Length: 114
Image 1 (cartoon, one colour):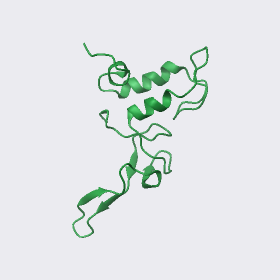
Image 2 (cartoon, helix red, strand yellow):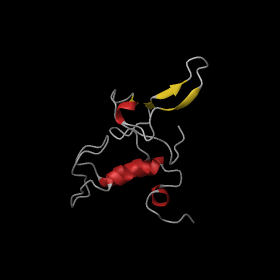
Image 3 (cartoon, helix red, strand yellow):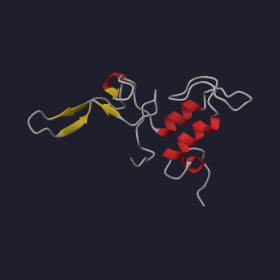
Image 4 (cartoon, rainbow, N blue to C red):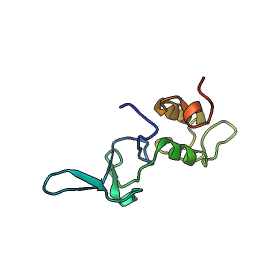
């Protein structure tokens, strides 16, 4: 799957195997609209977690990650998505970097692309 900054992720596991409820015309099967915008947790589903987890963009997940405390060994002190406490901070950064079309530094950290 090609990731964009608009790709939606499960905020619990970081997976993209997510669904959202939608209104569909019963006679034509034509998509009409999502149930709610923004999506409420009960209107979403993560196939990987098998639960209603909500949806989040990379920038929203990056913002949540900014609230995770980091110890002096550069390890996260609380679980974050699929990363348990004790994970090296840069392993989490690599997860983000792999999903950013222009790289983490440009897309989420505000550096200019050269």
